[in-house]
Length: 278
Image 1: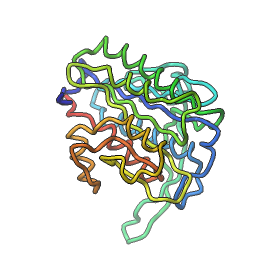
Image 2: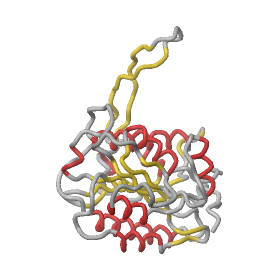
Image 3: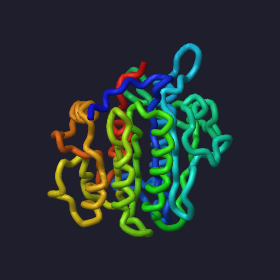
Image 4: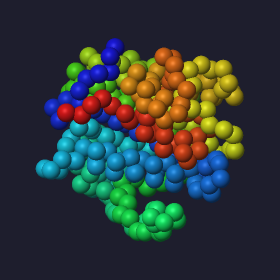
């Protein structure tokens, strides 16, 4: 299948972000940062929603090229949107852009034109807050995503297939998630099967394993399970990953293990590369 359907306001795409909100997400992320994993993931998704909104903005406003859901799973499973979008699942992008829960002022270092950096203040829209409470009901979360996928495809049977991105730091606490992952991948539009990508957020110091094409080199059965659940990257995503310095093949999967801050950002960047917007 081609994964080549044009994305337009009459034929939109669909992103579903599954965010692990278990207690262990309060641990520091791997690498040199002292930031909590929950904070890093929330910031990365909030930043991506801003970038999507900018990318889809035209003179008349943000166009609904995508419908977006952010689902948290920890002490409960459900919408992770805050503010006016609280409790909602798949939301047209224009509504997402217009309804952040709040806008924060944050500091950012930018080049000063003389080889140094200067600190400035930027506006940072926030749609979801970091949460770290409860277990890791990944199987239930994948089932929740499956129901959203099925409903969306009924309404958009010819569209670019939905992309589900699962960001987690631990093993499922409600059973083997493999069957739920297979169920998601059993849904398809006329343009291809649903894509499920998985990212394991690290608390350790090991090097990330990014976009592998085989189980060889993965450290344990948990990593192998997430790899087996992950879809092969479509050709345009593989090309983009290669342009960012990743080694790819026709079997490369949308999977990152032991991710640090940089890997989280790259995973979301590559995993949300859809086809050309019209």
